[in-house]
Structures are given as C-alpha cells and as structure tokens.
Image (tube, rainbow, N blue to C red; front, side, top):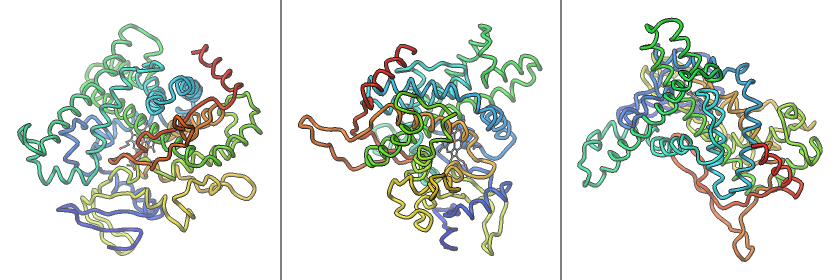
Length: 455
Ligand code: HEM
C-alpha cells in the first residue's frame, strides 16, 4: 500500500495500481497520458469474441485508427448535430414507456442504441423489439461479466477451464464463451453488412453515416485502403454501438431507481419544469440552461451509482515515478470512480441521492461535475461523452416533464418494497425492480397521444 489515493497490489502474478482520487488520476492518466494509454492483456477478450471491441485494443496504430474514426463522428461539435434526433428518440421512448411500462429496461436499450445506430450505420431502429437491439442486449449480457481484470486473471491462471468437456462441472465458462463469440460476430457483422448494402442501394443518407463516409473514401481513394481501414472501421462502429447501449441504458436505470426511492427529488424537478416550461411544453436543448436542477439530477445520477465503477483498466507502457513511488512498466491501472464518488469529504452523505449538492446558494450549478471523472481519463477517455451527456439529458428531462415514476403497488394498493440489487461486471446497473410509470396528468396523457400519432 502506498497511500489512500494510490494503492499498489500484486494479484497472482500481475502488478495492479489502484487510483482512488481524481487529482492523482489527472496527474498520471491525463498529464502523463502517453505512459498510461495502454490496456492490459485480458485473457477473456479473445475467447469471448470481444476482440472486435476497440476499448480493449492495446495502445497501437490499429487502436489509433479506430479511435480517430470514432472521434471524428462523436467529438463535441459533431455531436451537436445529433440533438434533434436525440429529442425525437426521447419522445418515442416516452410513448413506449406509457404503452408498456413493465419493460422499461428494453425501452431504455432501444433509446440508447437508436442515436448511435443511426449516426454510425444509418440504421433506423424500430420503436419496439428491434432485432439489433435484442442482439446487442444478449451479446453484452454474457460478455460484460467476464471483462473485468479479476475474471480475466482467473482464466489466465486456469486456461484449462476453456477445454473442459461439456459434462464437467466448471465447463459453463466454455459454453458461455462460445455463445458470446457467436453473438459478438453477429453484432459486428449484421449492422455493418446492412450499411454496406444500403450504400450499394445508393441511398444519400447512408453516405453521411460514419460507416458510409469511410466506405465511400475507400471507394474513391482506392482498394489499397480497404485491408487497413475496413477492420478499423468495423471495430470503431461496433464498439460505439455496444458502448452506447450498455452505459446509457444503465444510467437511465439508475435514474429511475433514484426517482422511485427519492420522490421529493422528482417533485422538486417537476416544480422547476412547471415554472420554466409551463405544464404543456416538451423540453428542448434551448431550455437546458434554465433548468439547473435537472442538470443537478443528471450529475447526481452519474455520481450516485456510477455505471462503470472501476473505469476500464489502463496499463503502463513504461515505468514511472509519482510522488516518490515507483510504478512498474506493464502494471494494470485501475481508476476507482467508485471511491471518488463515495468521498465523504467531497460528497457528504455520499450514499444518498441528493442533487442539491450540485446547486450553490444562488440556485446555480456548482463547478463540481462528475462528468469530469465518470468518463475516464487521458488518451482513452470516452469519445462518446458528448453524445452520452445529451442522450441522458434529453431522456431525463423528457421523462420528468411527462411521467410520474413511483413505487409499484400490489393488488391491495400497498407499496411494494424491495432492496435494490445490481449487476456485476465491467459495468454495473440496477437489476429491474418494481416501479410504476404513468402520465403525470390527463394533459400529459394527451401530450403523449400527440407524440404517438407523430411516430
Ligand atoms: C453515460 C454514458 C457513458 C459512460 C458513463 C461511458 C463511460 C466510459 C468509460 C469510463 C470509458 C473508459 C475510459 C478510460 O479508459 O479511461 C469509456 C470508453 C469508451 N466509450 Fe464510453 N461511456 C458512455 C457512453 C458512450 C457512448 C454514447 C459512446 C459512443 C460512441 C461511447 C464510446 C466509448 C468508446 C469507443 C470507448 C473506448 C475508448 C478507448 O478505449 O479508446 N461511450 N466510456
């Protein structure tokens, strides 16, 4: 152990450095980003078919090319273009939530994937039961559990687990690996082939998509580009699709859980909305600056139950010395978002959902924004963070305007109590829980009817 902010451990034969403070993370992963931009070797990536995912690609020219492709499409100024679509999709999600409230998690998945799918592949997800949404849900569910450094270390230490006969106890990992690989292949190839076909059909919008634009470049600049560009493009596209689904829908699950457990927060948010928008207006991004409490709710959602609690592991490409402490080359660097979000000196009563902590005495937002740490750091920082922020804001604001989210009641009208449970793995979100989702009032119900007819 070095200090509370920086912990050193050896797990099996792997050196692991855990960073528990935003300050140290910035000093190392941001300011010395060249040293900290690698990913560790994870023994589960290949067998589970996750090599397609650029988030696990080592720091290399291959990664740089995929990263550049994603960055061009999702950087701050480009992401502004998605906003009208994000608002439209949030409204479609409201209709789905009213019509079929039990499956709220599936509607979040549809919403979360829809923006990326359209931008990346020019694929318009259908409002319900889209086959690609179901595919990504299934593909991510199995793999995400296995992509943590500790699971990978188990497989690295006991690789024979992948070779056990099917009847042998412990062989389920082999079966899961097979299923995950098949699903991942489909998730990578089906939308990519769709985009290619769409291009061939000469659709103009398809050329504006991330995949379409680069395929056109290959067509114009010569086939010699294809062997390098096409695999990088496939990786970039499928990673964006998978990452956007998993993280954004997990964040919305956290938000709904907070609304069920903290009804006062919902009431205060809706009071702000009534004041600024009146009772019959749907929110747009022009309203965002006038709704500081809604932004505080978003910040608290990101902080309260961070959906990537230990970030994605980084690795060092050379040795380093920080504050007199030696950090070896090849060390796995875990960036502990959870510890930062639970720092009692910064967040009093950190386990409570309390958006007020981000509002100052003048009713304005403070300078503390968890978006500065929940999206990672340095050269591997989440390239989708601007789109993610806008997606989550449009979903949260539109839900708060139109819906009441509350505890579910049983047949006798008694509140159903429950203890929240969370998934484990690289990402973390509440397991579906009982809740009631309905229109806020008759007027909001009519508003939703107009949205339904517009769909
Ligand atoms: C609330 C939503 C999201 C959260 C909390 C989130 C969080 C993260 C985190 C913590 C990382 C690892 C950063 C690091 O290693 O330091 C990451 C990586 C990544 N994210 Fe996101 N993300 C979100 C949404 C998105 C979206 C919408 C996209 C779509 C483009 C996206 C694409 C990616 C990609 C491609 C990487 C890998 C970056 C690399 O390894 O170079 N994410 N994200």
